[in-house]
Amino acid sequence: MPRPDWLVTDAAAIDTELGVVKTGKEADVNLIERAVPGAEPGTPGQSVLLAAKRYRGSEHSQFHRSNIYTEGRGTRRSRDARAVAKSSTFGREVARVQWAYAEFEALKRLTELGASVPYPVQVGGTEVLMEFIGDGRVAAPRLAQVRATPGELRELFQQIVEFTRTLARSGLAHGDLSPYNLLVHDGRVVAIDLPQVVDLVSNPQGFDLLHRDCVNVCDWFSRQRLECDADELFSELIAEVYR
Image 1: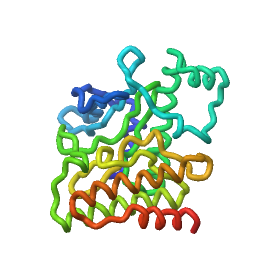
Image 2: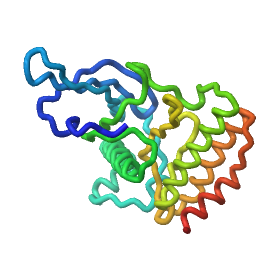
Image 3: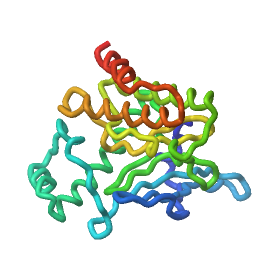
């Protein structure tokens, strides 16, 4: 669904924390309700549920993002780059902020491309605010949790192929695609966990990561007894890159 304009323009909007949706080694995802009361007493207001992804602090995090994803990316401040390379306490904090902003930028770019991802709302520090994918307050299941008929599996697979094609046409790959970072909501596949999106030209590992994406996806669908050839998919995507 498109992002309502008032989410980022209405100064009267109030955020309410509704609890943790998911915890992970690198980040926690909290549920937020952003609401604007009615303009007049008794008139209905507007509200929407959002996901706040918060990269965890150094005292709690097991942050271990590989630098293979960041090859070809620039760091403006040399002091920050040195700190990240040394993995000092300051460097790890810089890395978390960088990942949050990288995820927000990836969400913006992929939304503009028409890829199926949560719409971005805002970023600040180590928190990324984005569309919540789910029913009510219940998050949509990961693809790995879905039990589907053969026909439904084919439809889900085709959606994932189209997602990867959309990225490949712009010289991009998810870089860490798997059944665990693809959500399924009302039959729609939505890709999440995007800070590692790689540029296939500037990152020397880009095509290896794209191939790994194909293998991860096809291995899962093959286990569900849907015929899928990772190398064939990879070749199709390479052709999209060089169209």
